Length: 120
Image (cartoon, rainbow, N blue to C red):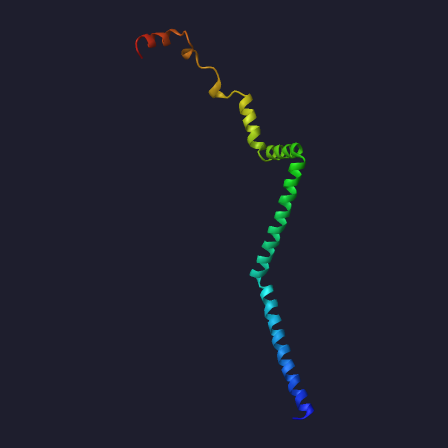
């Protein structure tokens, strides 16, 4: 075999090796670009970020518990403002169910006393 033939064989082998490496890399890139793989990576990133935020939030609560409680109460009051408002109105107003009973049902009424004596 002449020198040029050996170089040609070596070049073909190197080209074949390079082609297989390129094919492997392309398959790897296609795998990374699949929607399911992208979503999986995104979910993992979101989990890591949520972990970081949780740790920072816990550190803040430990550092300033009174301020955190104030913010929490304010947020709860804001979220349940309609329900709280209805409860306050109901507590401080009299509706028909809580008004005084009619005269016939008042204690000391003769009709009520007669009914009680007669067993009914």
